[in-house]
Image (cartoon, rainbow, N blue to C red):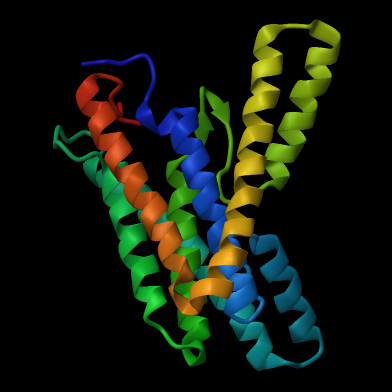
Length: 228
């Protein structure tokens, strides 16, 4: 059975995922030793600087999340290849979202002495999210980082300035909405850390649980997941 749009490409799901992405990044940076969960460019930069200064222990703190992020992408590819053509009631993306929820819930129980493990687990979850959810309304988009969305959003807005086409305007709105959702997620993360400390990451778990349910119930109503 085919559907016009996959649940994974809807705006409401993209907003929830971006809120979770912003919260994860704020949590890892503000509470887990100033390491990025999503912004691997920053981690690679800081790792390289630490290596140049001979600070091997510091370099490891940034290197492992980068490796975990890459592992998350690889695992997502393997899950997709394994389950994409199955007609199970649960879609392969939902399996990954459940894995994200479990990983982030585990992080909530880790003390700050285990920040290396905590940040690596968060980056592993982010690797899944960035690989599994790559489009909204057919537009290539990321819910765990902003630089690509910012470029595409400005480009779409500039296109609209010349073309006055509705699709260009809507594309720009989509990108900037996701950026704002990510920023709001970071704000919520900061507030949650001040209130609950290590348990703040459960906010991301809760958002992802809503995503899981949304995908399931919308799938039953007819939007479907597709096989992609």
